[in-house]
Length: 325
Image 1 (cartoon, rainbow, N blue to C red):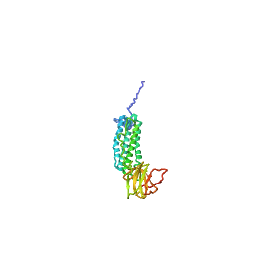
Image 2 (image 1 turned 135 degrees about the vertical axis):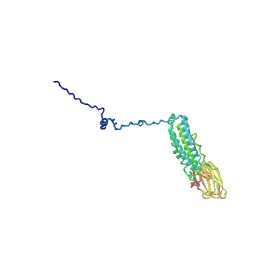
Image 3 (image 1 turned 90 degrees about the horizontal axis):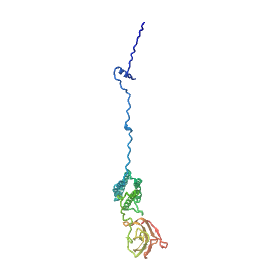
Image 4 (image 1 turned 180 degrees about the vertical axis):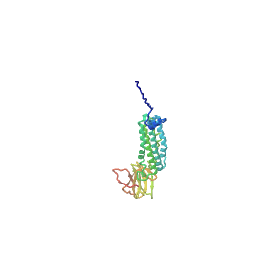
């Protein structure tokens, strides 16, 4: 008996590619193209975000000639401001010019701080900047005296003297700045030859003296008495009066270490004397270092007298201090 063999075939559907998305499967089944995944992709970071920040390059060091040129340029900038201070004709004009000079010095100091000095002046350069920084304080110190409106004897100070002292104060402060810079930089480089001004001209009252024997006040008739005065001290003025010094019969100037004689004195009289320095010939007053005294004894006008302004153990006349006159 022959056996019959039956072979059952199994159809296997092979699907190329698979997807978890049912839509993709449907599309494939319909003969379409599968859609791309909608999951967003990350954008690579910009390469520029990792670029390092630029580094400032140091200022090249100046040569000695270039450093000298920088200092000379500073002087040329400051010179006009210094000139306005020294040429001011009034205290108000001086104050304005002084403020402008102070600002200019600060600006030039800032410019100098930006440069790199030569290798041989690395230590000196900070001292140069310190000299500029010290200017303001130096000005305030030197202007302290000029700020007073009264002289050393308590009288109003003349505008000419105030202006002179103010200019001298600024000139001293600026010359001190220049000298400090020069000391710091030493030989080979110069500062101050261009911009430091000459000393201001003092008014006549500064160091002023009267003429020896000058009788600059007289009143009333003349008498027959005379008074010889020997002055071994500082310059003085002798006032002869029958009452008080502000009503003088005569006033005479006697320089130190001189002897003079006042003639024509009438009646009994008192002798007042004042000494000092910086004689103001316009107002007939000393303006500094004043002292005021009188001989206690009233002198008999029927005699001629000799007095000495030098205190001595063997003197026979006493004196007393008085109010200003």
